Image (cartoon, rainbow, N blue to C red; front, side, top):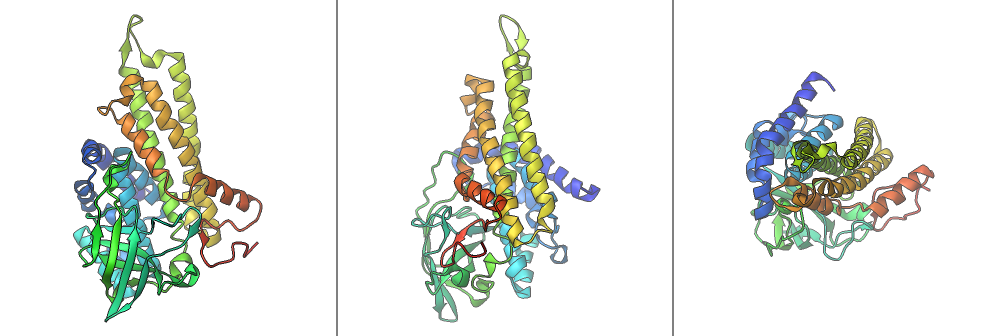
Length: 395
């Protein structure tokens, strides 16, 4: 990593330590969007990390970007996850947007710090099995109209725009009808139940949202139908998730090690860190995290030169290891700390809750293992099955 790129990651690390981490408990407790943390990142240019330099962004390569998201997760898992989602929307705009859309929407981020959410999940559809949308977008008036229901709508009431995943004219072949639409947050016809009382990732604020005749201007249609599946961006969601999971787990272990070195117990009057059992636990977790970090770094370093077929396996192996290692680390950290690890005054329990919740995001562990196995066997290893296509195609 060049000195310039390293400086960007160091900025993220500083903000995570000094600004994001102190606010994280309050956001978690109140289950509200981390707006102040977003603004802090924007002031340092980090909301424009994936926006090309020609439009005023940082134009980060994937390795540097993953380093930034991992660093942000050290301070606040929720801020890291929401910024990663926003940044992936920027990648979609860069890949399939028109020149006019790039000028307009990138400027909204660079100059004004606007956030973009991505809403794809639906109540009756399992994205872990098949990519399919029941939300419909049709022509209406001078533009288009959206109708449907979305679940897990991250950054609801916080972002300025939502990239809504729709089926054009209700089509069922997603390769031909999957349409992304950029919908302003203040568009009429958007309603939410406001319910978001979850185990973890509470500050991502992701309630269900209903679209009833929501108008979308013609220039809000992002790319042609099906184009979003052919540019290798959808796979980057999982690569960024891996960085978030790893950052959460690293932060939890760092807390546990610091606690173990400072906690003195009687009658021996020695630090917990002197216990051979604790030492073995810490050694195991450090080794696991190192392994997951190496795989993530390797996937990220190969990403920019990889084609569409290669990116799925790269993301799957990084996310799978980060998932399994992250869950083990955050669980055992509480055991290392002891009973106090369950107190909300300590960050260990929040790390455990956040990691357990965010690792539910697709693709699931079973789906990732299936795809990794297919890739090893020389079979089609697409990250998602796409409704309307032949799953055996390309074998």
